[in-house]
Image (cartoon, rainbow, N blue to C red; front, side, top):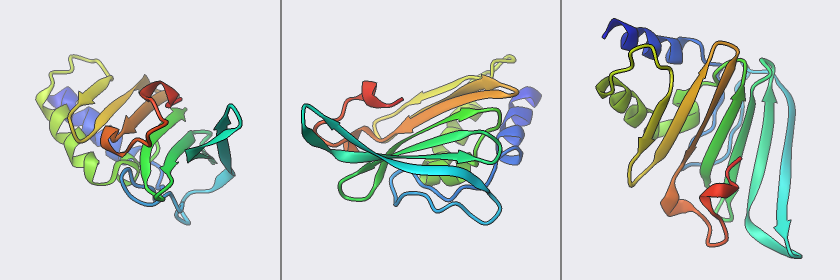
Length: 152
């Protein structure tokens, strides 16, 4: 139980502040976070544009955050990869509480991976010091032309 509390404390305290929310508008990174590079990628295949776009930001910590934004302007999926966790509370928005609740119920025994699959949200977070990765998505918000395999 002590290990779980330590893991949750690490998740909250080691985060960099990013203002993005799964299920809400795309990120506007706070003044506390320096974004080294930000770009929006247009996604198209077979000459037909998709109904979503991908926004990628490289934080000053070297962590890459990608947001998948539907035609309605809502973030339906996010990914992160890098040496430090981004601010998962801001990144996951209201779904952070789901992650925290589920993490408290799952015995960890030193394992730093967490996978949550619920009807309203799916979240995977794992890794170790200097190598964190994760992804989260809202299946019901996927555009018609989007598949789970498209999340990278």
